[in-house]
Image 1 (tube, one colour):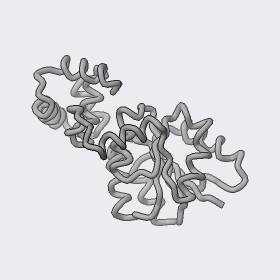
Image 2: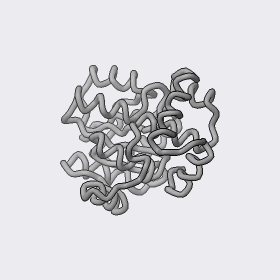
Image 3: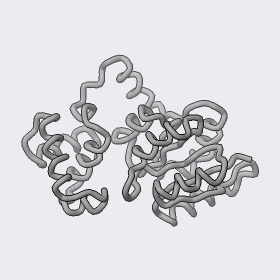
Length: 208
C-alpha cells in the first residue's frame, strides 16, 4: 500500500485528491496537513511513501518546506502540486529537490500516474518542463527572473498579479516594510524601475 501525505491549505482540494486516490486499491491518503507546521508534525508520527505538497500555503511556502524536507527527510519523495503553470514554479521546484511537478487542473488525469512513477524511483516531468531543464543545464536560461531567490520570485508574481503590499504581507506572514524591501531588490536585480515594468515582464514571460 502506497502511503500518501497531502499538504494543502484548502480542505476542498484535499478532499478532491483523496477522492481521486480512493479509486486505487494500492494507495491511500493516510495524512493531511493544512500548512508546513502541520506537515512536519505528521512526519514525526508516521512513515510515508510520498508527500503531495501544495506550493502556495500560508506562512512557510511549499518551496521553503521542500528545501527543509531535503535536509530532514532526503529520501522521502515530494510531488509539488500547484495552481501555477510550469513557467512559474516548475523549474524552481525540481531544482529545490521535488520529484515531480503537477498543475492542479491536471490532477484528475495525472495524479495517480505521477504518484506511481515517483514512488517507483523516477521523476514526473512534463515535456515542456523537461525542455526548460535541458535549457538550464545547457546554460541557455537567460531570463531575468532566474536570478531571483524563491521568496523574491514569489513576491514578483504577487506584485504582477496586482496585489498591494498589504495583501502580500498578509499572505506571506511578513511585514509591509519587508515586502517593499523585496520589491526594491527585485527591481535592482531585474534592472527595472517600477511595478508596471515587472507586470509587463511577467505577462510577456507567462508568469501569471
